[in-house]
Length: 282
Image (cartoon, rainbow, N blue to C red):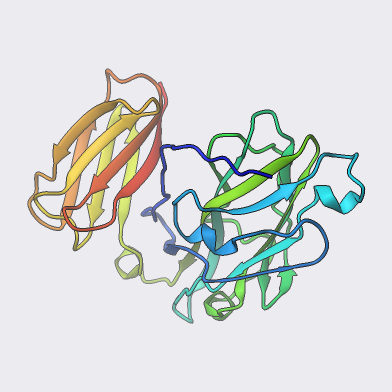
């Protein structure tokens, strides 16, 4: 089945400042497939947003010659390379998966989504029956306070074999399902407060009609570009980092902006583009 991909606006979830500390988001470096069903292809395609995704070509339901043809087999992702303090208490695990199907109206959705350790699954299945969209869409599973029904330890999280297993199903016509990017973030507490968190602190969000952007990175300088786009791609705010150092501390008046989704972009002169989706509610 031919795979068709479109251009799109991307957002990458960043660690947020809160009660818990966090590690990540991190991408997988170990991949494998197992079980029966249509095999996943190009699993390493999940490490970069480049329209070269991991994919599964699922046949029409239920008229294919073997019932397994409208299920994928199990894709396993591990090797996230976390390094959480051994004394930390794990408070939550979050997955962000960039999903899409190749034509509108398809019935592809999750079948199994479980955290795993060295090939064995633990805890609750976080699969959802919501159908995937034909535009690239980030689906978030878990949260900073969700351990997926299992008491994970820092030692387990740091093991190269820690990751998750993923299986999907089709309830409509022939469809290609693709995953072009995924990340995992692990939240934990050490009892030493925010100052000891290991991830770069970023905080982007609305308080009423004020958009606060607080960030710290060695890549941020006077030349860093800050831009806010609405969901239609229109720029509603743009400036350079006014502080001239490795911090950004901005408060932007959004009282005249319409309610909805906005994308905050921070582009260092020499560094990775950071993007965060935020929602303005009025």
